[in-house]
Structure formats: structure tokens, C-alpha cells
Image (cartoon, rainbow, N blue to C red; front, top):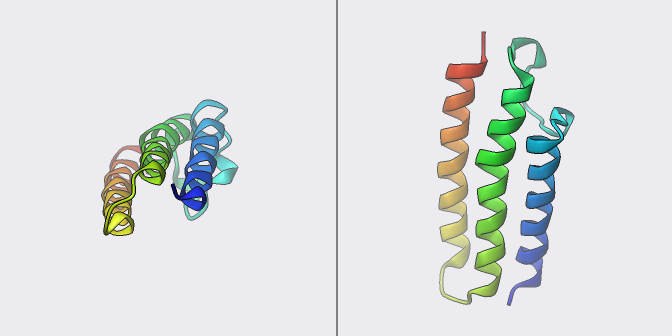
Length: 94
């Protein structure tokens, strides 16, 4: 069991709750707030469609011990990040 990965997963689930449910978009960095039309939808998309699956995958992977587990987590993270980035650029930007 990897306790470091478990803590990271729990932190991502907490951020998912704060951003997706409580709509605290100030926790998100790297976007221009003036260009976002709907900040509530931004919180839902980034919190519940990016941080929550990534946190759950990190928690699940913390219990599994197999070769190349870090590589699988990075690939899943990059795929989720790409999907969320494309959605935000197409749906939420002016």
C-alpha cells in the first residue's frame, strides 16, 4: 500500500468537493477569469469531471501494487486533463 498516493488521492477528492460542489473556483489556477462566461459550470466540470476521477483512481491505485503503476496514473491524468481542457475552451470561453 502506497500511503503517499493515498494522501494525494484524498487531497484531490477534497479539492473536487470544494471546486465542484462549493464552487470555490479560486482554487483553480491558470485560467483567465474574465474570459469564463459561467464560473459555476467551470467548477462543476473541473471539480467533478477532472479532480474526482483522478482522486478516485489515485486512491484505488494506492491499494494495488503492480509494475508501472505511476505510468498508468500519469496517462489517465493526461487524458482527463486533455478532455477537460478541450471542453472548457469550447464551451466556457467567450
